[in-house]
Amino acid sequence: MTRFSEESVLLIENWETVEEILKAVERLESQLGSLLGSMGAHLEGQEWWSDGWRFVPRSEDQIYIAHERWAVGRGYLIWIGLERFTASSLLGTGSAPQFYVWVLSKHKALANTLAEAIDASGEDLLGDVDHTQSGYVVKHPMQKWPPGVPDGLVQHVIDQIIDFFSHWAQALHGFDSIVEAHLAGKRSD
Image (cartoon, rainbow, N blue to C red):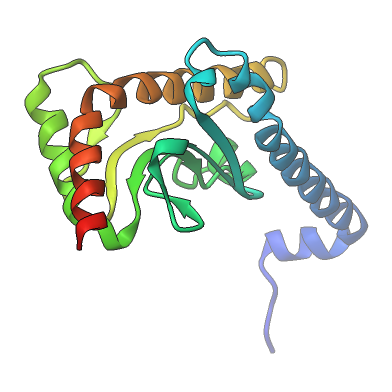
């Protein structure tokens, strides 16, 4: 006969509480998604924002910004974003939410050129340059929040998002000529 572990027996004995906890997790995930969705208003207050930036809430756990000059088709060539923003990644043992600078997949040559130029710049930049040819140019983990400490979490998240997005929105201006040359080459193809 199969025996249940002590943990399973505890869950069985307290299933009503387990269901309440699972519902609370769903509510927390929804609130985290709402927090991400509200970031547009926080970013619009930054000095650099009015230079043509757009906020895109991609999904419940991912947002990005892009510059209107980088529009290609119905999307954007370069994204400055945050992905995997979930309770388990922010509070738990899973991989931390990830900030990134990313280039559309069919433009990997641009991603490689940007990664090389960023490395060669010698600038003190936020994140790690990615040379894996995955489309990512920069990756940077969000600092996790200790579970059990709710006070300050919202501001912790807002500050990190503003810092990373502001840093790269301004830093990428130094690489405009590379992006413009790539776009000009694609338009002439």
